[in-house]
Image (cartoon, rainbow, N blue to C red; front, side, top):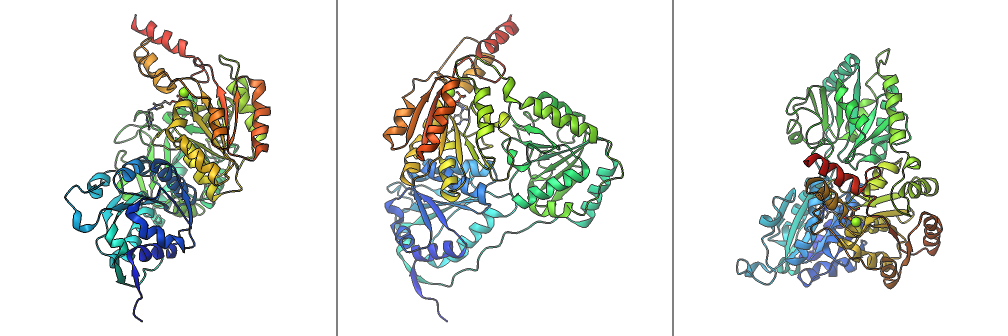
Length: 559
Ligand SMILES: Cc1ncc(C[n+]2csc(CCOP(=O)(O)OP(=O)(O)O)c2C)c(N)n1
Ligand SMILES: [Mg+2]
């Protein structure tokens, strides 16, 4: 049978449909009208956004939540450069994503035509693969490859430029088959070696990170941890990989980490690192384990062979996805006695003490320890927490007990402005899960415009915006390094409650602990996207150290 003749835009959208795409995030542009036209009749939901940075972060959040590539469409030049933070997040966070970018007509290339950009050059180092389509007949091949590249090995972002005339040109070409996720399984001998190492260990520890997990993979790892009474920590912003209330959970390896957890990892004789890279933040600036050869016996499990031996030379390297590895763990058996099991109990108790918000007191009338205690009592455990970067995020990371896979959206890349778009993206695809966005005053306004998208699609995300009138994290670093010399870190803020109202959402200003709970209840009953504008004392820069204490300590050190 001969293939029907279709426009490039139609062929492209037909490929998306057959690869299972059910949602795209976009800001429109005249450069890809033919693709938008084909989307008009496709069974694909569209979220139209206010800025490409927000659209790309929503697509990245989709990829994080589903394990399938998040799809984003933007226009050429400024549309593409605006989308670049989402690409960087997908790269660092190992998230499958595909960004389609409009492009000038083929015949105008190299003249620096209107909004012309060389996408291979601009996105080459940022993305896992960046390319441009030259012929509409090649859409089936190139889109299929994009899905395979985005999801295989260490997942990541793909960028595909779409010349305007390639989208309008007709071609007769057959569709590609639906892509398959390329699974990477551990070998029997490797699993036997792992069992041998575990049987010889006195003090093992597991660290979980990366992507290519699933709810089932987490359940399997929980069963393995139970059989071995193994202590398990999650790495930076990967807390949803192991339930915080489980007896084997011993905390997370992020910023402002529990010193007892660090000590325990240093004292371990076997480190089982599953899925992650143990990069700068979890490795505490590469000080936690020796490089290249850790003193501990290291077993590194990663879906991408190029990450194995990249920084650490593991004693046992297993090239497998967490999904396949955890399936194989079912056949690994514990030794007759578990000399570390008392240590696991102590480590879990240390975690519980460290993450107890009730003991926390800091400056100001609004006490975050009490706020977190209230949230722990009130919010359902399947609430999806989203945040960008700033000291405000500590309240979530340290004090919210993540219990389920798929409840944490936070960039390991430390990108500000992620929380609101991630929350919008999450609620678009999981409309029945409560979504809470934690944001700082600096962080919020980097993509606060997507609050309008939440209003447009009736998504009642709840933004808890902690306003301390500054880029607090940087101020904290300033006080440490250059005490008393405040430079470019102060902010004069708008009335964020009025902002929420002006957008058609619900907004309230919260200045005391007593005001928080009733304001939260009113926000929830409004059923609208809501912002609680919480005024935080600038002194309350960390749960335990005030800004003045940090400055005084630094000044004392300089004397
Ligand atoms: C896109 C981006 N720009 C700049 C930074 C550097 N940075 C990290 S935290 C921070 C300040 C965050 O301020 P805010 O959101 O108000 O949170 P706070 O630290 O005050 O709680 C800045 C500027 C970053 N991580 N990402
Ligand atoms: Mg701030």
